Image 1: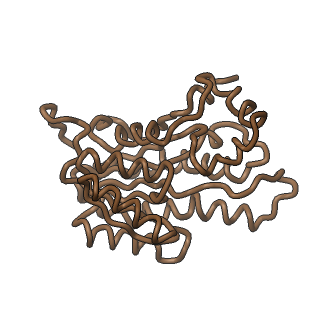
Image 2 (image 1 turned 90 degrees about the vertical axis):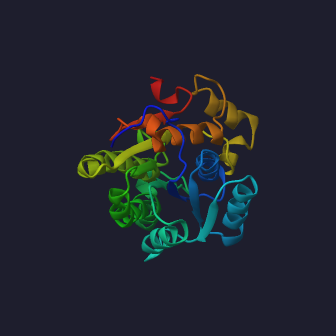
Length: 260
């Protein structure tokens, strides 16, 4: 991909992006960040009202955004998301695989395999399906980019969350493999690895001072990360600012993963 050093490397004017899990938290922050730099964005999430509100907020701020209600784990969802994005926005240059999460904590010895399968379906299978559907469009773009959102749980042991840690470790490996496969098509593939971020998904860790203090004691910077800090990193990976970067993990965790 040729790089024009005269232009702002963070300028995404004329480009389009699909962001999953975009109705709240990190996903919404990423959508807002890309839109603020000129990118037309398709926001996808399960709850129609919430994702529509997120898209409307971007429009009201002067950006271009559309909302698509979809559960990424359902059959045919990935094809529909890509097709509707291309139809409504005129193409697809950037795929942000942010949809994911973990709904339970349990020792592996007593974990039901149905729970394992559900976690893999959301965090891994849906990501693979979206990549498969998006790649032809990204390959025909001059700026094809995939950003897969992982977690520090995939970098080290995750007691009581082996299912989630394994899923996010799979995302890291998948990212490297797809990056090598797609490089000849000019498509860059990287993963963004957040640490403990202050969103509603981590509210349960702030229910009492003792739990919160225990969590933050492992974070060298001593605080929660903010969604916008992850969004800034996503902009870097999605833009020409990282034009010679592929197959890599960008860790934004306040130093957590550097701890012994």
